Length: 161
Image (cartoon, rainbow, N blue to C red):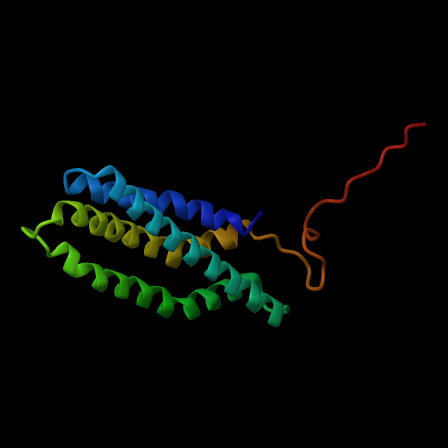
């Protein structure tokens, strides 16, 4: 369940960035907006899950390190790939944004604007919010303990006699 928290939060932040960008540019074509939001949501979830997975891989290889140090290390190691994918996607969309006056621009421009707005919030989310969520909600289970066992308090059994 803890692995899903960053991804679900990312969906909200990605949607908010896309909606704000769409409102700032004066409207949205419904079908194009759905396509753009689908792309932004995919990028947001992928970034969150890759970061969370990388931090958990680090935990598997270095079980003695404190969780906070692993989150910081994993975030630093994922910084480059997150920024590169964001910059490349923004550069690919640049010609679509600059299409003004070309036939079909009224359809393509909202797509590019929504994805750009979503990319801004998704990048912020992946670089800053996911590590904070991982620090706050990741269970601090002991090394070698099976998944799901860790800090949960033991339950007392009651006899029915």
